[in-house]
Image (cartoon, rainbow over all chains, first blue to last red; front, top):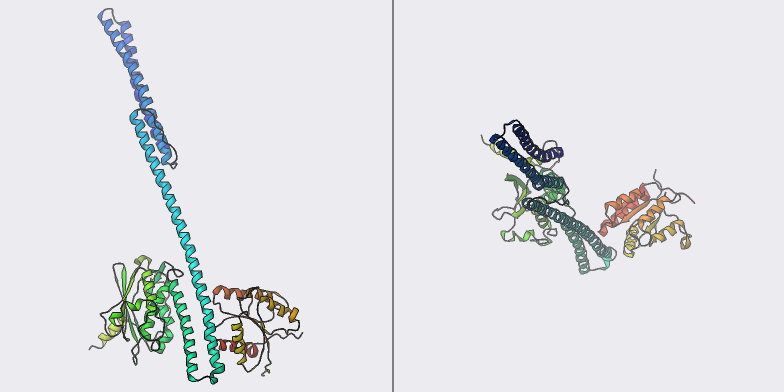
Length: 404
Length: 148
């Protein structure tokens, strides 16, 4: 490309030189011919005529030459130089000053180009500065996050230690001196131990909650179906014991996020469905998924004790419970955790207050375009012996089979 | 053929008096009365093992229960010391600590700890764990008994 530009520049000069040269040569030739005419012409008016023509031609020649010299100095050379300088800047040296010379119009053109160059350089510099600031801020955030994690871990670890002492020695007290204590004393000890154990649970749950988006913060393609399988596997004991039935959708999309966190959402929702089941009835959880417009809407419906509409917001608040500790265990962090995780993934989760006979949770998550979906053939499916798991399709066909 | 079970010498390396008491209580609950010796920090543990100073008459322990978080010499250093010494490295060392950290577990096994046990938060479970450790190292495994 450089050679091309050079050629262009050279040719501007060259062609002007050629043009003027040709004109001068023409005039010269005409002058020589006229001189020849003068010498060979008879005396008298013809001779005077020839001399006049010669003078005119000489004047013409002088005019052409001086015009050429003027244009060359005032326009051609400065233009060539301008072209050179601009080419240097364009080729990647923004610091090179563009020189101005020649006629007024050309000098102002040059100074405009120089002004443009200065502005561009200024832009580039401030852009580089902004980049620097951003990097420094990112580094600061990373450092602060690491500090927070250390603090959270140490705090929870060191807080557990005294609790262990309280719980353990109360239990020892009961063991060694139980026969010397009356029922009230044993009850007091029971409450003390229970309090310490609950505090331990709270600390662990708080730590898990604080880790969402801090420790677990991966952003990679995740197949929702795989995370559901994981959750069902983790819950296999309680699903087995309660003879639970979980209906899974035939297909689930892929999302961008953290697979550990997404597994936790399934585990909490399905775990809750089992925990808050109607007595004397085995839990049944139906999971459905529907994709629209880059988003997937998932509903998790159970046949349990349900949730009163007035508590639809309260249940998502951390450590808020709707039942006494005697009836249902847990710290009340499950749904708060689900909400935090779903929102971290750019989605929403809420309770469907229109649904009766059990609880229905609806959550939406933005999904991956099909090209990036990890749920494509080639992913290995693990055979999990989940009790009575069916697909929605199978259910439908079952229904139609009964009709004839 | 059932070998008669004889009591073993256990060295507990633990700085926290509460944890020490709990471990003693847990051992008390067993039929076989093993002798429990206690070293309060890493330095005392080394002194005991080498039978130096006030520990000149100390027996050679058949089992060491080692806490990792100790003042002065850290538990990990004690472990490295024991397993690095030709004379001491045959003594089984069970790391008994509150830490669940992956790096502590890996590091301990890399330093040739014989086992790593996390102290349960619940006393009942702790009792059970101590019982199992005791049973395992007294009745199940064969211990080296160099008669010196």
